[in-house]
Image 1 (tube, one colour):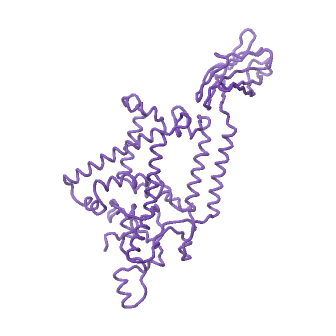
Image 2 (cartoon, rainbow, N blue to C red; image 1 turned 180 degrees about the horizontal axis):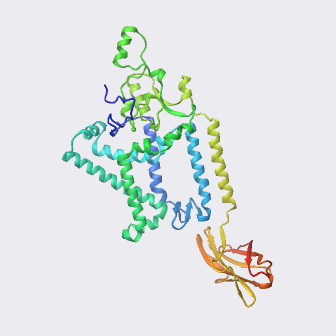
Image 3 (cartoon, rainbow, N blue to C red; image 1 turned 30 degrees about the vertical axis):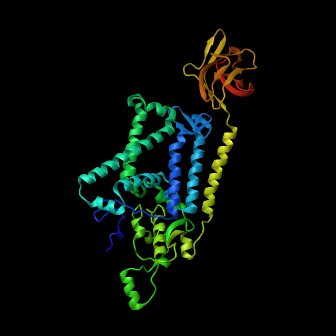
Length: 472
């Protein structure tokens, strides 16, 4: 029995006792491999470089949860704008569903961080230190020696170094590159929370990318399990053409051909597709949950077919419908994909609408804690907490007024200044005559004068405020 012949009753990454078998995929060349390598390089560059990109002197992408501040490619958001992020992530989620409905699990094999970093970084380190697939398998089976200990030590040291870089880069999305650079020059105890997060993330990355690997896709990631809900018979998959490949050119099939005649399939049963698979499956057994559609088997099979002078495409991107009709089917736009596309459009249009009506300066007026009102010299005083959030790139000055006679507005500063991309917090006291209240309440219209420091232009808006006082 060939060592790459997989048992039908268990995962390809487990033996008969349930112990894990670490797949050591062989190197492969081909058009898909070249495309994946190029995309991996771009995605890694974007992940590492995006935190350092500046738009208008601000970080392009920042999720500053501690200060409740978010930067999204020139758009500044505060905590009260957080619902807009739901639309952003909703559009991304529907986008993933849309891509899956048409092109299958292309995300898993081409753009998922799990695949990109393992295949684009960690396996490269492994090949550089320990050699090709045959050498790595031989090293796995050998007892611990000085050479094996040295190779493994160097490999895991490099894994740790790379994981530190990735963890720091990920942290930059949450604290900002400026603060991160400052943190790196100071003692960990001065930024204990951030340091603990970075250290824990480094450990997770070393464990996941260095050891857990394909088990994350098989065990932990839910995407492979609910793909059947998203995909249909028109979705593109990496598939083996059974009608063309069977019966395989096994020794038994060759004997039967000689004795009984008949035609052998194009599959030469070389197991090359199994040898290059990063998750340890045999694609010839049909669509499997473990398959991440990385196309390594397709490149490997095309290489073999070229050598034996047979048409390529025995393993290819196709749909179940295309395989059934015995003709390669192009990606099709189905009603399911249309539904996901409608979800994308809804999220994007909603986001554009809310951004369009969003004001650059947001004013929040909340009643202060404590007594609801005070009475002094015949005047009722209401105390409010005033928060002014300036989400623009220029400073503003705000003043408050009321056309009603007998009403006085008191703030610490008149007008109230608020710098660009800053938040100003202060108190606002409203004094009104005691006899103006009806059933303990009075609603006033507060005129807000918002002056742009750069242009000098003043915008006037009206805000209704309910005052409380004694019952008359």
